[in-house]
Amino acid sequence: MTASKHTVLQFVPLTSSLSARVHPVVIFSICDYYVRRPDQAERVIGTLLGSVLPDGTVDIRNSYAVPHNESSDQVALDIDYHHNMYLSHQKVNPKEVIVGWYSTGFGVSGGSELIHDFYSREVANPVHLTVDTSFQNGEAVIKAFTSVNLSLGDRPLAAQFQEIPLDLRLIEAERVGFDILKKTIVDKIPNDLEGMEASMERLLTLIDDVYKYVDDVVEHRVAPDNSIGRTLADSVASLPKISSGSFDKLMNDRLQDHLLLVFLTSLTRTQLSLAEKLNTAAQIL
Image (cartoon, rainbow, N blue to C red; front, side, top):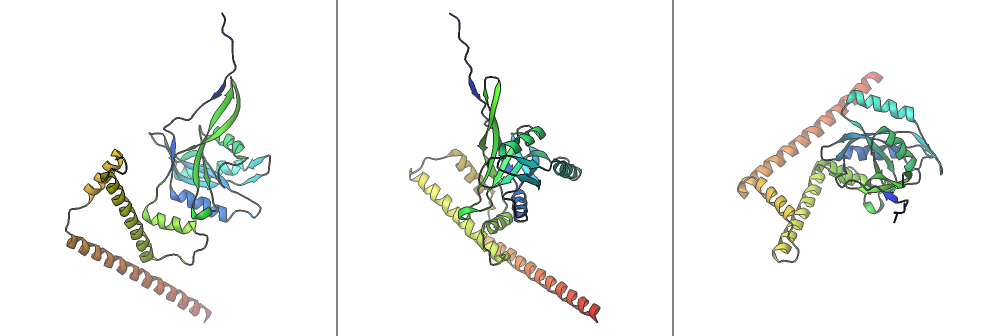
């Protein structure tokens, strides 16, 4: 009995280790270009620069915008501008190579496949980063995708976008700026003390969450997680063993130093402004 030949629809899945990590300067740059976009443009796109780490993580550290024209059925990129910008970045930092591209908007849109196909010729398996610049409900929806091939036998049919894990790591100063960026209306930029107060409130909230998790584990309300336990143990072990009085004195000394630095900065800014006004008045006379 001879075996019959069947044409099989093949779907090539992603490797499980593929993930992405984006630095906040990339998000700020994308939002800045979106604010300064042409009036007729609904979204902006650009190139992502970075490197691929040994564990397979795509580390996105830089970006630049690429002018484009987009309609319902076609997308036109300024390829010469893209190549010139990439050559300029290579002169400054040759370790940063093309790792993908970005676009603003919620998720993947209609013309994304055409743009992704172009970047697939620039780099193998590029990452597509989407940034929802509308910040709906005060949340920034930032996602990373890569494409997988869908073929019928030996004939490729289409490419399908699949979401991959994305890590957005922020230091505390960057997190304060990112929280401001998410708000549609901001009365004023918070000063250093207000930023410190917000950081302390966030720290107290995290400590309360840790206390609640530990109590739930002790009371057998949730199953223990060994990885979380090791992280908590390492965090506790990293704290210096000093008395509460010494810690309060150290904290107060650091706070006084910080207030002195803020005062000197404000004084310097006032002196520079006064000197500029005196210089302008002298030129008029």
